[in-house]
Length: 611
Image: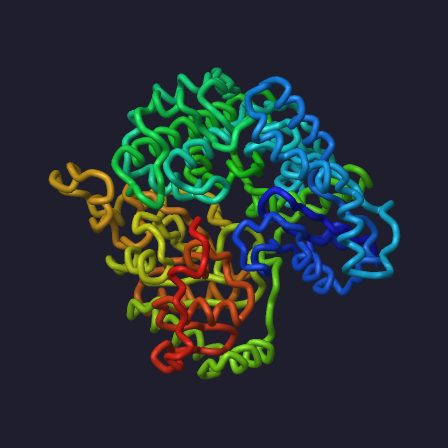
């Protein structure tokens, strides 16, 4: 038996994963344990979890691999500062002590930290380093259901690369082309995230969700910042940006070009201007991704596309690539960001360095991305009793029946079952659920449960067999990484007066038979659900369909704004008591909010730093 521990850390979304004989056994992000969103620190808790789950001590692990190469990253940092000198000295002087103390000699740092897990771990000779973009590409190709694929990775920046194209075949994977820093699609999108008043590496989802409320009137101005070639390659004009050497993303030239300073989220509301900015950068991003996809399809003549990197989480752009029918099949790593780098690094070591055979699963080998913690019924009851919760324990059939009844009566449900998801999306293991037919559900969940902006869209979870009856998409989307339009016969066309509405005024119009999951442009971020990956969730939707005729339910992550997705029964209970959720279903336990001790209520509105 051969085991590999993969680690990603020290930038954002630290994580750990473990492979045993090439099989993905467990993976989790550190944020879920520390309750600090996008936690960049050493993933001590995540490592402890994956070791425990695989019944291994650290000293029994064969190899440990880190997801990137610190020396190359340091080289890029130094060369960038030299190229831009003397500009950026403040940023340089802040970064250097951290690099010299910790980051540069990461092998020593990792060895010291790893020893804390197991005193018998006594040599650093089994620590290896992967390349950042190779880790991403490996995480996309090796678990995919394809024998052969072209792999597109796009993110902020790794060591030097910001966009790469690789070709995978069998157990081989080779990076063929790279675009280098400072020319980065991820950093371009993040610059507009920052400019719109959202948090970089966190608020990009918001910008994407805001885009349909606006018009892409700034598209031409954005194209003065970025020169896009016909093959999708691009160059960014650095005179508009500050990210290469500064402490902010954009500079005064950028602000003059668009006519506004960056939005201060504490003082300024989102206006039509920000919606139009969001629509414009989204359109440019889609254009680049589609052009890149077309050119690599033409060049490599391969039918399958795999994707990873932070830009691969832009499910709207993914949906557009799918709709263009450039590739026959597309598969995207569910943990496409840096967390997934831990997995990719381990898979690269297993296949590329050690030459091990690749076993291809016709679905994929991610196990539905349910790779995290799980709790048995006794553990759940013990934790709930310890915090003073009141609950009923039901058998399986009654649990599914009761929950579907609550949903059909427009109740907001906290749902905690099985293993936690790996990656940023809740997929029906740590989810908040609602009735998609309700006209008030989207607004109520956003404002009363999630404590976040009312415009943020929710995803529909749908039984796979009913997908094409409701959405204009033929491809499975198990990881909620594809956006599709709602079927014409399910739409409610807008009146002429409604079509004249601007911005957030568009929000409250009923657009379809499932208004809670239909975005203002008639799109939805679809999750297909099958019995073989999540029986509980599948059975619940099936029962809801029997009661209502609707095979869809609202699914959003079980957390509030700024909080990581819940990990333990206690996390779930705290979130339940800190929000206006009506019921919590956890294992076989059913908790009714009205029966809980009111003294256990928590003020969750200010509990977490806003994202």
